[in-house]
Length: 350
Image (cartoon, rainbow, N blue to C red; front, side, top):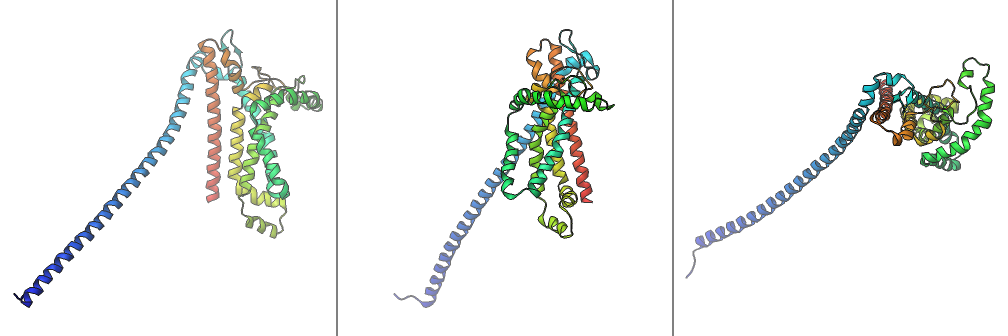
C-alpha cells in the first residue's frame, strides 16, 4: 500500500516538531539546573559572608565587654575605699596599713614624674637614632643597629630591674648623683631637685630605667614612619640647596608627625604602666619629696608590692582604687593624644 505524499510530509513535520520539543525541553532543563546551582552557590557565599560579619562583630563586642568588665570590677572593688576616704584619697600621701589610712597622692606623683623623666630622655634620643638610621647611617650598619634597638624591646622588664638595682643604681650612686648634688648646690630651683644623700635608687633612677625601656618603641615607630616619606620630596629639597637638617625639619618631620606622635604616646603608655623594673629601683617609699634623688613609689609598684599582703577590705579596696586611678590617667592621656592627632589631621586636610 502506497502513502500519499501529503500525508508523508505531515507525519515528517510532526516528528520533527516532537524531536525539537524534546531537545528544547532538555536544554531548558539544563539551563534551569545551572541556574539552580548558581543560586545555591550565591546563597552559600551570602551565608559565609554573613557568618564572617557576625564573627568579626562578636570579636569587636567581646573587646568592649572585656573592657567594660575590667572597668566595672575596678569600680566595684574601689567603692569601700572611696566611701571611707572620699576625694581625700586623691589628695593625701598617708599610707598606713596598720591604722588603715590610705592616700593615693604619692603613687600618683611618682607615676607622673617617672614617666615624664622617661619621655624627656627617650623622645629626643629615639628620634635622633631614627633620623640617623634613615638619613645618615651607612647602609651596612642600618640593619645591625636596627636589630640591636629592637632587641631592647624584647628584654623582660624584670631583667631591666635586676640590672638597674645591681649595676645602674650603684653607678649613679658613686658617680652621677654626687656630681649632680655638687653642681646644682647653689642653683635656687635645681638645688632642691637634686638634694639629699645619693641613695642610688629613687625617682630619677626609675625614670632612667623607663627611658631605656621606652626607647625601642619610639625609635622603631619613628624609623618606620620616616621611611614612608617619598624620596621625590627629599630629592626636590636637596635639589633646592637644602641641608640635611633642613630636609629633616621641613620635609621629614612635618610629613610624619602623626606617626611620630603615635609612637611617643605608645611609649608613654608603656612608661605609665611599667611595674617590675620600677619596683626594683624606685625605693618604694610612700612619700613625696622635692628631690628627684629621693625614694618614691608608683601606682603599679605599690600594687605589685602590697597586694599579696593586703589584709582587710579597706586595704584591698585602696589598692584596687589605685588601679582604677592608673586606668583613668592612661585613658585621659591617650584620649588627649588622639584628640591632638585628629586636630593635626584636620589641619593637614585643610
